[in-house]
Length: 319
Image 1 (cartoon, rainbow, N blue to C red):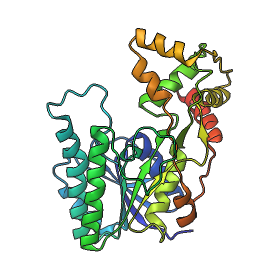
Image 2: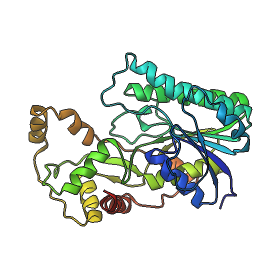
Image 3: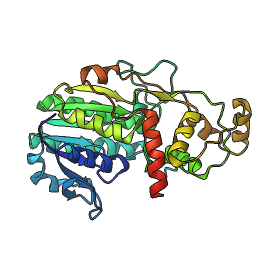
Image 4: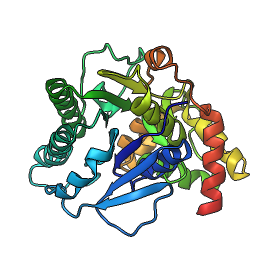
């Protein structure tokens, strides 16, 4: 049991941030939330710092000296229809520029540890052999490129000023409020329609929002989480049909999965312009979390099946 710390969380109003703040407070830590829009209640937060423009972080100067650690979640994530004239420049402005500004102020305030939440996309977007921390980075899109550049910045600046750091690359995060592709899966599961995914067998590593919150707390407080990169995932892997079956259990439904051959499903998706979505849903991506388990003695609070059932149950009660 770690001693109580004061931990600043950026991106505290987001899907992961809200769960993380509540989790940290539940383990006795004092949580300071950095937000862009004030007035939105965040469970467990002791103090809220509202920054309307991330280009000006002056409001943090009176807060950071009280903090033992920063967990940096805020950033520009995947944009489905990016209208920016320079998409990579925009990703860099937020994901690299904001990280630089936050690091500089944390260093001036002598914050002990900086936890940077990156992405498994730094390793790649699919694999046959599980990814590990030893792999050469192979970012597959502009978002992942900006995250890798931010990782390198964290390593360089933290070492220069003597700050402890941990870099975390999570796989796809799921939970009842999940956005993006997993949010689409939740909606499909809740409708109870017959779905043509019964024969898709690519295996994926996922991490529940509850397990990720626990892992980030560990990285912020564990003495062994120093100057290192960690892949974050549940211990189990799942197929798309297994995801639907577990969600359905939590929703009190029966998953109706049709055994359509993958080739026919791919053809149908191509004809309706959904081939890219199918390829993303059925892409195999697994990771090896032995380093986190051994070096940090971390064990996920929930199995993937337990967390998917919990997700389905909470989604049904809140939607």
